[in-house]
Structures are given as structure tokens and as C-alpha cells.
Length: 172
Image 1 (spheres, rainbow, N blue to C red):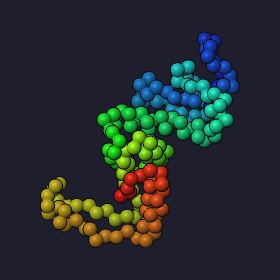
Image 2: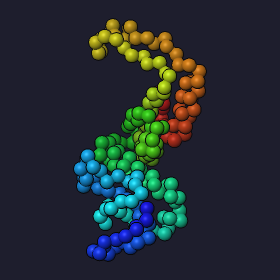
Image 3: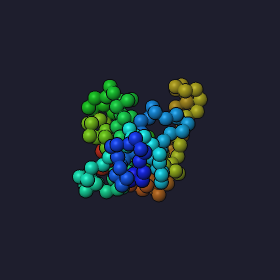
Image 4: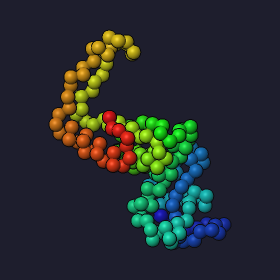
């Protein structure tokens, strides 16, 4: 975004500076986050990062808008996957549905992790088991004969190819 106005005590920024909003997650109450998808935002100096002219020459505005999502995906991997090492598997559900999922998938590839993606497409049969969890009879009665219609299969194949091209190890 661009700075419209600055307060009297602000020294590091001036109007028309190009900035990226990166709020600290612990700073705001969970019920009222700062958010980044806004037309106008009032925030503190420590919530924004000035973008240099070199960055503006290299990246499009669309790419710059993804920066908070990519940072969020990286922080998620750092926080919850601190013990992961190259070769470990990471299970991603519906990675094709958002920029965050796509970012996680690509970060896993860069970190040499094995991203395994799960697709839940509309129209696919749900092979649910009946009975007590973990019981042998529950799995024996599962309907494993249901098959997805051809249109769903084509949709699955198309998304699977894309996920694998983005770095997925396997798609289920």
C-alpha cells in the first residue's frame, strides 16, 4: 500500500511511501485483528515495512500482496514444524484452495520436506466406516466399491498434476 498521512511523531515514513503491512500477531486481540485487506488502515510504524525501489522494480503489485501470506505460511512451518527435517512428510489438506496452502506446498519443497496433499472434491464418494473406531468389523463393512464419476476424476487428475508440479510428493 501507500502511506496517505503520517502522525506528527512519525520520522521514518512520509506520504506516498510504498509499504507492506505485516502486523505482529500477538499485538492485536483475536476478536479484532488488524487485517491486511483494507482500503484504508490506521496502524503504528512497527506494523509496516517500507518497500525499496529495487523490490518495486522486480515484483508486481500482485506478488507483493502475497508477501503476508507467504510469511504466515513460513511462520506456521517454523512454529509447528520446528522439529521437521529434510525428508519428513507434511500432510496438507486442500493446498490448492488458497494462497496459504500453495505457499506451504512450495515452502515444503524448498525445505526438502515431503508434502502429501489431500483432495476432497465435490461429488466424490465418501468411504466412511461404520461401527466402533478401530474395530475390525467397522473396516470390513466399509463401502469401498463406490467410484467417482468421470467428471470428478478428470477434475482430480487436473488438480493432482498441478499440485505435483508445485512440489507435492503425492496426492490422495
